[in-house]
Length: 304
Image (tube, one colour):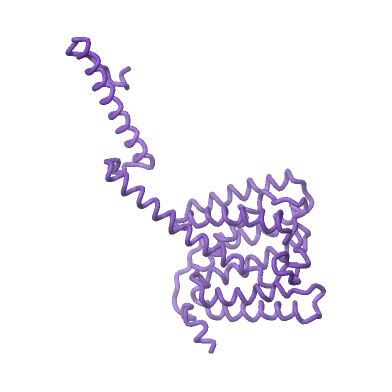
């Protein structure tokens, strides 16, 4: 039964390459989550903006080492989670931050969390022990969900149990099961620390279905399954659009050989300038012909 459910996961104990970069990203994010909560809970809104700047610099720094696909996916994830934060927190009241706002570091922090999930999912550790990690996550999160609806928990968590069931469906049927597993670890870490520190608190009752929910809900990692789906789908659309734009520019003659980072833009504007000069020349010839002055002199724009 276990082998059938996990048949889409990589085989255990196979040889996979380890990239130091993947572990550095994960270690940095796990460490910064804890440090950020310590500084955030005793600070003002101004400190939240300062943490947001640090998160932005960190995210940009790590994205510079990623390929174009990952960069686009992370940017889409940040945009999507920003909208989600305002809808779920400010508008619906599913959870509330200290100042009843969306702290500046939160949307960019979502970008770091999603990038960490991608980094761990492709790491040699997760690839080699994917099935064992999946089994551990299912057992731990399942026990957490059962505890939430057992009646012994201080706060009921029927909503978290529903989210856990949705997480299982995504794990066995989704496109990125290893990303979901990695998201479980980082989201559980930040949710436990954030709620314990008082940076935010989940509502006792889920505003959508009216179910009780823990602080935090046990199946909260499922939301990153949705983030991943949006990022993958949106990323594919953006890449397709860039491809069509590139093909269109080539068909219009704006496809010089790349000789540097900004060569395409420079050559494009060079062609625009030449076309503009040609239009000026034709216009001046037409004017001079009408004035019976057949040989006008038009200097190039760069000389002028």
